[in-house]
Length: 400
Ligand code: SF4
Image (cartoon, rainbow, N blue to C red):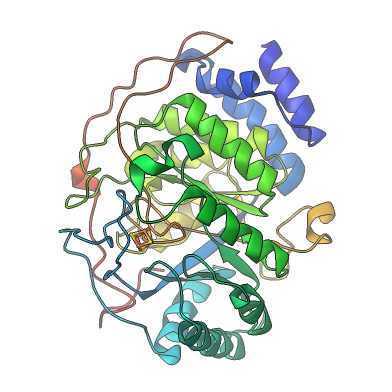
């Protein structure tokens, strides 16, 4: 297919595809899907080989958020029965992090619900970063604390944070439909603050909130412009108790097309499958490793993932290898430019945006391109959604 040859050539050269080409990937047919995965897989292997980076989420503060992000079970008014607790102590957070690192993770993502940190919160997180770094040599730490005020990114950097996550989540045009308490521009500003402070920027999206193909391409092109080192792709977990609980819009095939499109638009960036991996990709998860080079190990912020051991087995069975602590994630041209991060959030995870999900339904039509996408047939899989009941904030051992 000419489209795929063109996209592979551009990806190997780190050249931006056109919007029409990105839309055409989303519009490919199921008959062409394996060709799409193989093509994007060539780009993935060029920049990341067969390595899979593992990241581990630690929810420092859960629930009790005054913001109204529609996808989030920690939002104001959420009736989801999630764990609710205030700040973990540094040694509690360090203990949770150690479980993830022992399971093979090389990055720990410290997440707190809320609009953004106070200066006192930043001090608190600084103490936690120190505790984790003192006890785990070589660990990468990413913070995800919401919107940053002036100077806070610099203070986190000084405290030893390597990266900062804040997701754009969806296109600028639809942002107001999913959240009213802050704006898309606020989110862009925080990603730029992180970048400006020398933190590796991590920013991604949530698919499945009812957005169109054009919205998805818009947000991914906006991300490319912001130039984060990592792009987490969340697939909305429509959690009961949130406004988007009925938005079951994704199929495994749709998720693969979205990941392929992100890989073509951001060829040399760490593309991470974030929340919703198990719920929406289901048995197609191993195929998605040909597109993304990074996943979360174990549980998400507010929902449970598959067993950490199953993550490791999946990676090995699919012929990939877990990236070691001594290996550099990013290709040389990016690693030396500084930056390098992770992220999270998941529809049904928690922050970064801090959770993940939106509105509407449907599937976007194609614009040009190949055969038309099959209509989405997506049955609610509430049986696959489990609120997290173990790990941070509980007395039970974490899943790692
Ligand atoms: S995504 Fe973050 S800011 Fe939005 S409601 Fe959830 S915890 Fe609050």
